[in-house]
Length: 149
Image (cartoon, rainbow, N blue to C red):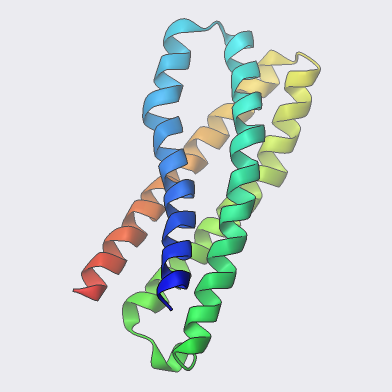
């Protein structure tokens, strides 16, 4: 069980930590030093790499989380904070899926075709959704820590 908790935690840290870094460090720095075309190209390259890690993290979170619930005897036998964590986690995964398929894929195509205005509009939407997911991720950590106390 400890191994699955550790794997679960590491996957969550990769996802939430990556969003925190991108939102509070990378974004302001990119705005400060890069012109829009270079900034949009940077984000395309960053997302391509980061989203590969997020797909892995999401998969690990889902498999390890559901397996641990199974080990505890199912949802009827886990504490309330686990239910809340599962609900928030599924919400985050849905938002991520939307960001990837409905936003990032067209964003990347616009960047490849140098359609900077369209890419910029989509990037603004991605930024807002990542902010929501970052807040949900931080909330999840708080729920778990408080729930375990």
